[in-house]
Length: 340
Image (cartoon, rainbow, N blue to C red):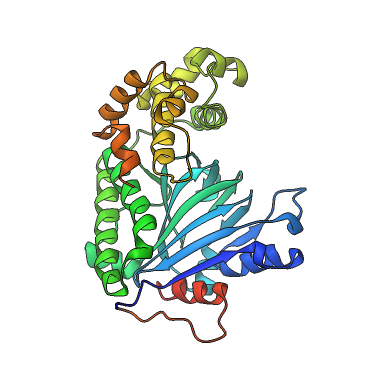
């Protein structure tokens, strides 16, 4: 019988309350990590499943609100360097990059990519996320040079393709063999490179810091109100205290505010349909996110993703064995350090 792909499962419920946050933080060793003001470390809960493919490490995490940061000084000190991807499944994460010049609000169904040698800070709500660390070696084997990627959102058809692959990996890796890992890692590196090349070929037009601030605030409001039947441009203007002209200017490169709201609702539902824990039927989910009928929802879902919602729901050799006595965090740290 073939050996399975190496995996670790980490659950803070297995630990004393006074150790839970510190033990989890020790596994995420390449970042500075802290809890939001007022959070009680004794109430910290985290569940993480992780797999190594040799050239990449995937983790499926369910976490409370946390704050992370990494700086170029940290990268120079620890020498750890890889390309990092995060596919948001639930909750919202706000990334601040390049010393505050770039702010990204990432919600369910969206993928952000960043460079571990450059600065970023993230602040999350309680969230669920699939993260993927791909070694720079694997990326350079896929392409002669790595396309610009720090703070990139992978969107459109390429974004859905990459999200589907990451979701599928998390679902299928427990059933796959360690001998499959090198091919899976190569496929992932080539796909990420192709996505980044596509994103580089259609760069976003520059916008002023004032417009970017309105865009960030509006994105945050939209993420917090995706299920509200009152979510519309006028409601956003009223909540943010901005004119319609300013709001529309902030979304001029996203085909407008209404199109952006529908895009985020569809992407969020796509993630829910891939979640085996989601018990609601498709019509209930669609109605909860503002679609007037299941038929209308199915039509716009197919227009965006190229397949119908029922298809989305149904679609559901390196030796990294742990040494005797190693705990989960030690194994995970070893996997990630192998990437640099």
